[in-house]
Amino acid sequence: MSQPGKQHAARATPQGSRWWPVQAAPKGVVHAEIEADLSATHTLVQSAAGLAALAVNEGRSDEMVWISTGSRPDYAQWYAGLVQRLRFEERGRFGPWELVQRLKDRGVIDGYILYRSDASEGDLYTTRPNMDQSLNVATSVAGLLLGILVEEAQQAQAQALGLDMLFDARDKDLAWCFETYRDRLSRNLLCTQDPKVPHIRDTAIAHKAFAVYGTGAPVPTVAAWLEPLSPVLGWNSGDEFAFTILPTLYGHFNTATNWSLNLPLLSAGTEDYAVTPFATLDPATIDFEDARHAVAFVMSDGDNVQWLMGSFCMAPDYWASPDHGGFPFGWTACAPNLLQLCPEAVDYLSRLSLWGRPSCLTPAATTTLTASANCAPSRTCWRGTRVRSRRIWRRTARRFCGSSATTSKARQPSPRMTPTRGRSTACWGCSPSSTHHMRAARARSSGRKTGTASTSRS
Image (tube, rainbow, N blue to C red):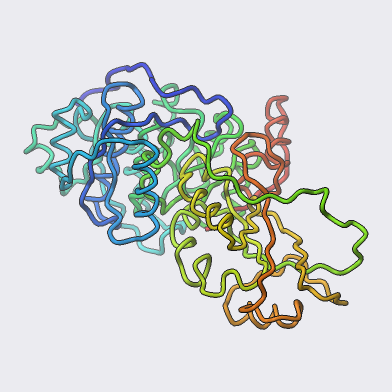
């Protein structure tokens, strides 16, 4: 068993004005043929993909991994855009252990990190008694030691490939791990993930992030140790306020990314990418003398990265509803995060907006006040109405707009999203440029804390 492994000079572009870590782009991509489920096999492949991305960042390889997403149309759309954007070579499809062998032969993997599956009883993303955190310990050291994540039952298969055990995480806790490796872990990203869930471990490993779960020790110490305005990857346990208050106090932000897939590859080369702009509204055209009451129909929870990358865009109950376009409607969106993590999703939404479908996308989670040309004066003003079903869309539009939601063709442009840091947005814990985050960061730099709380959406 070896202690901390090789040191490599990072080759990724410096942070600059970004808040998400920079991922260097590959010249080639291989596909991992697995089910993206909660299995140890998925965890194994997540770690292999993370080590491949790390090797590209450090200039030791030119190849990254795309984890199979099955027949999902959303990720298929993002991958098609990714191929056009990065112009990489597709180098084949591999099973889990075939992929491990390939990466071992290419010098990407040095060995394996052994962990034990969490057998605690209870729902995911709850605080369960007797949780085994060895997977999070293993995730934290995998990028430092260049080891794949191997569960106890998989150890014989790893040894059959000639892999040596680099580290046994089974008897280590998070506090020990942080104190031992804090000087080598990234201070610009924190991973919070249930030890039963494999997702996003590729991103944590690619950027050498510390992986935790819960709000007890050493999480408060870690939150204070991170550089201000650091993203918190994933999702934590239990009460939302309890785990979002810590990032807020120290000027960080939650992102609701715990079910996201393939973030390393989707975020590769995004620092210079110019997305399709949204339709814009010229403030000079606003008639501030108009005394009519305005009503806005707004769908909330757009601060959730995994939802905007996943089922939101192509789900018939949301963006892909057959009633979409029938009347002006506002959507909250985490565009600043998506611009750095999955710009193809922003391109998809903005192209539909320019092609004539209404897309009043607003930074998460700002309530937008939209006045429709069809909206008759009303004594009632519903500000920021949240509409969650097709039936309510139609009924509410008829009552307050004086027209049918399926026939009204009024168009409302939406603000243009830009990838620059520091844009002023209202936020529920997910926008790095929100006022309370800026205040927290300033307080942090002066040695004070701020009591402003943030929340996020799961």
